[in-house]
Image 1 (tube, rainbow, N blue to C red):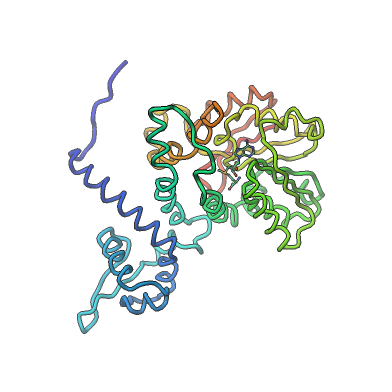
Image 2: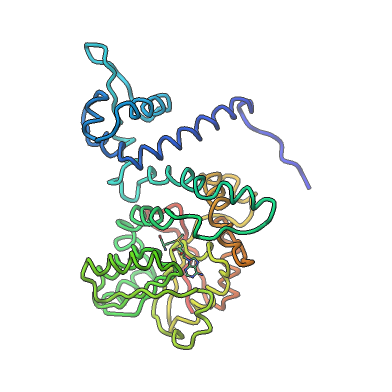
Length: 365
Ligand SMILES: C[S@@+](CC[C@H](N)C(=O)[O-])C[C@H]1O[C@@H](n2cnc3c(N)ncnc32)[C@H](O)[C@@H]1O
């Protein structure tokens, strides 16, 4: 086995300083996103002083001041002074375009909350896991579903109905959805994707399936408040559906958005999808764009971030109940192999318009 040479262009001491600063900056940006400070600053068309920003955000001026120190030294916010020597702060438009709730599918700011949130939920459990090899249950991630919904909102709102679905089967799915078919979203979480689809295609019938009652209750309430009558939510363990004759051959189209790799029995979940599809049914599995080996992901632009999210959440929840613990970076090769083992006759791996994070595994029963 050959050892890779260290080809880093900068000394490791400098790299370490960069790592410490970037980690700290990410935490402070997560706070800026969560408190809505980026949204407030993005609305300000000219540099503003701390009292103004505090008044517009309704937040403590002293906390904002300390936070501003991180933002300015980190190159996120620009600083200048007015005629009286008072500091003024400005979030450049091109930064705001990636950091606010109105950034839509370009919203990278939402992800700045992810590592701090996972650290809060699971640092101790993961450190223990290194000794015990045990998994961590979903109960340890109380804000997780809410956060996933924020991500889902950022991801699905613009892309799902207008870009993704029209690309499936070169327009075939859109046509069928408009005519009226039975659709299931597996691992639906709080139902953001299923609700968007149900709203856009009133002639079709939608079923959101998830194992989390909490998530499903939120989904049900959201669907009700929008007056949707073509959607229902069912609590099921995806791995067990394959043995339920009542669910066999029930759906024309099944989607799973980032919902297979977290499961403790992912192969059984894929077999369930196969069983739930009608004979000419289609399955769209949308999952992280990665290779299956560490070497294959060395140049992945988000490799460190995604492996850390997997270490802190996807792998440990997937290890529960002696589970597989696939992890988020299970990658294309393993995904294709498992879809084959689940008996799908044809699998195509496709890029998704305006979503470089994920791949679309287009599968025929
Ligand atoms: C990463 S979230 C994705 C949620 C949603 N599809 C989205 O795009 O935001 C994974 C979802 O899978 C669900 N899940 C995990 N294990 C499951 C199982 N065995 N059966 C059904 N759902 C499961 C979780 O509760 C969670 O809502």
